[in-house]
Length: 218
Image (cartoon, rainbow, N blue to C red):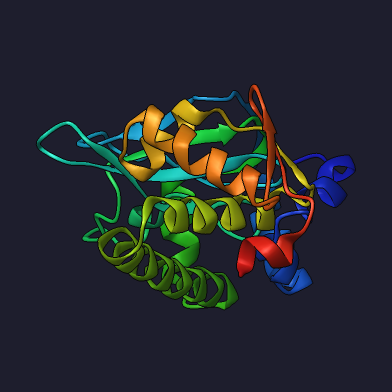
């Protein structure tokens, strides 16, 4: 990876957390990519050839049921990586990874990941720490999907996205949210209207504004 892109790569918190010596080792294996909104990084049964370290992109992990319903099980942005099964071969945590906000990411070939991971160094520690965090997020999401109302599910989803956007304006359509929550688009519209009437959010076509995060948390 060219030196001029180092500062940009460090926008990803995992890459930034690596010691300088470890980061220097993997820099040549990192490739910058622009991810488009709605781009599918991988699907079920496909071999995952890369892991992705998002910098400005936001990626949603989806699980597709046999009934054809897609449900969000995790969201990853600049704080993490996508593709843990490249170094944990039995970890089928999701069946699809889809870009929910276009932006940049750095990808690394699975062969390079496995080689670096096998050395049991700081790279492995960082990857495993993130995996534990992802498992906790997936568990929390599963509980929310089982016990909470659609309005509460929507609040949780928007909070996750807000964490990664670093902006009070979220570029999401009701269709995208419906796919993530595993509900109908009309159901999302009703829940969003309720939140807007309570001045928790403001929305227009493809744009959701969070004027007061505390209200959304409450």
